Image (cartoon, rainbow over all chains, first blue to last red; front, side):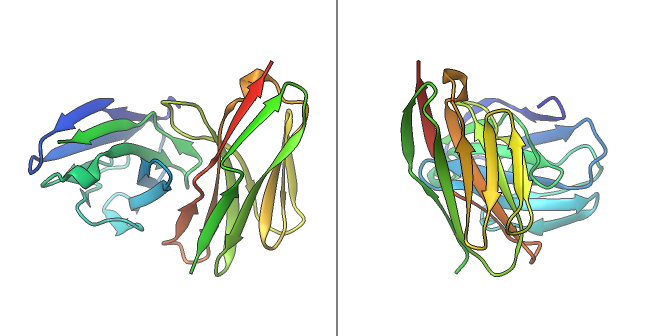
Amino acid sequence: NAGVTQTPKFHILKTGQSMTLQCAQDMNHGYLSWYRQDPGMGLRRIHYSVAAGITDKGEVPDGYNVSRSNTEDFPLRLESAAPSQTSVYFCAQRLEQFFGPGTRLTVL
Amino acid sequence: EDQVTQSPEALRLQEGESSSLNCSYTVSGLRGLFWYRQDPGKGPEFLFTLYSAGEEKEKERLKATLTKKESFLHITAPKPEDSATYLCAVQIYNFNKFYFGSGTKLNVKP
């Protein structure tokens, strides 16, 4: 979906390192969200935002931080990565109608 | 406890062999039920949203229906290009809650 871009596509971290996953949209939608996808568990929402300056916790927020300083960007921050955070991360817009291509993150 | 269950986990069909995928849910106040298609290595692609029991939506060979307890995704005369994982999700009236099922992996053989 060209409306949502995510960077990087792949990344490997060591336990305890920090990392920011980027999500950017080229439309003016207020709602953006972050999901993780793990085998057999389905997609689970981490954090979401309804507008710049407003963020809230999803179903699995522990270990992740977000900020929303403008409409276009919604970065996801891992302050001290753990192996349990190995996953594929997706950013979604417009109430989960459009998903980005994903970031595959491995924490060793 | 809010829950979304998809069945079967995997389904193999011959080209042209119609079938249905199931998404059952137990949630407190359904606001909408969503269907997606996901190809390997890609993000989910939105297909349909259903809001009330009895509602139906169609797109090419796909038709989604909704009851008070479950939704079906009917695939009529599937083609190999319909092979993908199909996901359903529910949004409940509490805006905080959005739950996905674990998906049905569909393989259509020519």
